[in-house]
Length: 142
Length: 393
Image 1: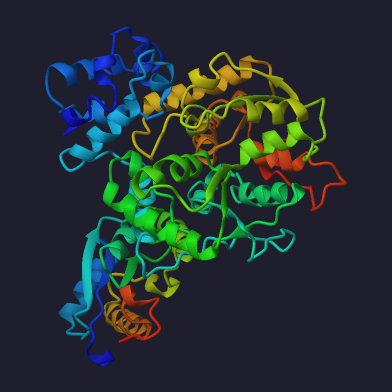
Image 2 (image 1 turned 120 degrees about the vertical axis):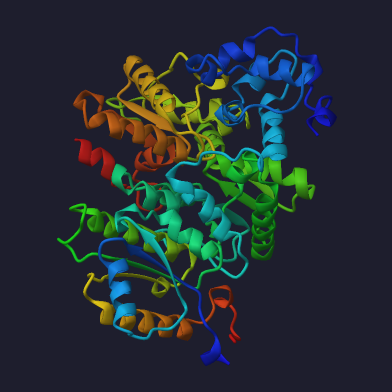
């Protein structure tokens, strides 16, 4: 049963690196699970803690934030902002009782299509092992 | 329909004197907002207010506290919001973060870990009949990290003070938001979900007395929960009021520091909604030289933001005005009793400090201050490190 369950994952991708990375993954025909829904943002620095919390509130099982490597940001330091905001979000998630492994921050450049597909695969597996978000507290998981 | 509530809230008793508009902190800054005009509008025309009018009110209750005819204006605003929340949604600060925290904590399948601030020197007892309600202070500590205030000192100080009064409180493992913001924003559905979960948790803890240090949690538990659920199985008390009585009754002895001069900012939920005005002053008189601000007690001005709505340039202006008022009394420290007032006033000061160093002024919580003035023979460690004051010195 568990293997057939497809988690709902929201991937915030920065326009300049990770989104182009996803494009590269598609062009190169790398396969990754269809659990990922990509949301394009101009920069990961735009992502607020509330946007991630909103995903969980609306029933996402996992959230990925994918941006440029440090130093490569199109807006100089947007990904540094993202890093500190993700830290804040993780602290809020800890108090709320949401498993911290449900949020992933990773740097993926435009050329790293293979890395994008691999990240999507690995994160889907992590979320699968954690089970559905709504069933987190139940002892008897599906 | 608000028309059905006209008698209940005493709208017809309005004699159009304008005392509310004189006292309203919002109409001092914004000429187009006035409680008197809103009431007139409701009587003469219809219940639909503009989005500005609806969300500009800070529900502080100054108007209702001063009204000769006892018109409950802040309750009217809440009802209007409840009726039209779908038509005109509010502009929330911090990108809705606090609303989402409340929404997520209303999910029965999540178990928030709200007792992680406890340290080993605090004496709590799982079998105690007294429960300390913490509220959203742990979240404030994360979101207002940049202000360099340790908000977790407030619940810690609360436990220390209760220990000194001979009480070992219980703390809920998994506490939800009290629902104050949702109630005042007119979101009754979410409020009821939160309230039901909290009442269930409090009921299963076997508490006979619930103590809240946050005035918002106190007023919500004490006055709003019984409106929906009838009389509660437990008694609700406010820590500031308890401390005031304990100081006056000699149960709690606090050392006086003659070099410390303080003034008190009355949180709306404490002074105007709950009528607790003298108790915090008793505490401050016993530990410091106390100076009163011109606007205090029932005429005290709100900290500017209620329920995380409408934090704008007007708000910042009146927060700075409040800090100026506190400085003008000659006091060196502004004391408040609400974690949110502390966050909002410190935030305005933080922004201003970037341009004007002369705006440095101590803003502290009354519980943290009182815990640091406990005499050495009191049980429990009284040495509280006030990281903010340390930093400023």
